[in-house]
Length: 476
Image (cartoon, rainbow, N blue to C red):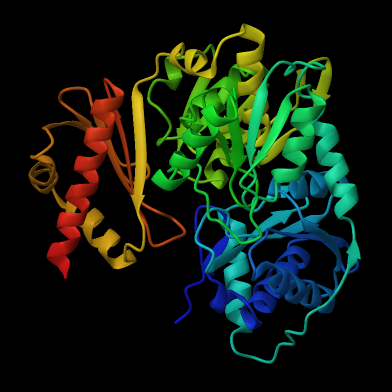
């Protein structure tokens, strides 16, 4: 049985299941879907990028070979941030494949698919899966291939975009640590920050893949950040996940800022009139700016659909962000005297730059900038290697009856209201919030909380994870 499945953003699974014939199957299925739907014709270009995972070069080469045999003309964009690949695809009107597992462990990998007009949607996913099923175990050549190198062109285009987002020299005076680890965003991020006048201090570069989750930053990563910040006298440390579409920004002490706060700062910087964000983003966002907020399920396809609905209804200045900070623009914006085209896919650069600009322009430390928004204190974490059947059993139990939910949460508090947009979000009678949600693309169970103080939020998070563990133990 294969581990490969579509989740909140693309195909994911174990590297051993993806590497080899499966890569050729899904690349061929995508090519057939593009041509059958009229999104591409024989001979059209298709871009292929990858992250730094050890399995990614081979998977990319197999996909290139399969795409050629399926009638398309692949172009190799090398190791590149996902938003850079997506931008290049939009500019040249080409479909894309990004070989990446984003933030998940190194033994896993995946493929993100882009049509010539942007990310695939859930209907595209179903069509690709159907094409893959039709290929099944039938004859298929999985020989690797090579393609023309377009990495320099794609990287230059992405740098140019980000070099026009802020006023010139607007980060002068800031000393910024860049936690490079194994992110494909590491080099261009340093170049962009230097372009705006920041003094850049590179940190923690690794030749081995490190799975950095910017939404639930591990204690080990936080310890590194908090050690580096005072040692190098940094104003902030910035980073990204493996494929460069989710940001990480710390304050001057090395404490990571919430991703949804970064998205909120980006929305205010852009002057957005409509903000689309998942239900897992902070509940204080609605009151933190002069824009209309639309809530969705978790995953960029749902945020993109929400942005498209707003644009179709006549709205302009439409953007979105996820709780992990990945920021999307559904319409073009004029900032710093430049028009910036829509990039409706997760991007780590815009929220990083907007946040650092807020600190530099206000001449305040980032801790002060963050506290100025007065959002409810939030925390999130996940239980890794949590069997999918256990997640399903927990959610089925909680949804089965009000009595089950009340009994489960009795050690924490009483239920005031619930929302079931994506996972189960519970407002407690005392105003705190707890949200249980299985990951859409990995064997993980996530828990999100809000409380009146940082200590209260952390305590509630610990209690929530403890209840999940106790429930799971009873299933064994």
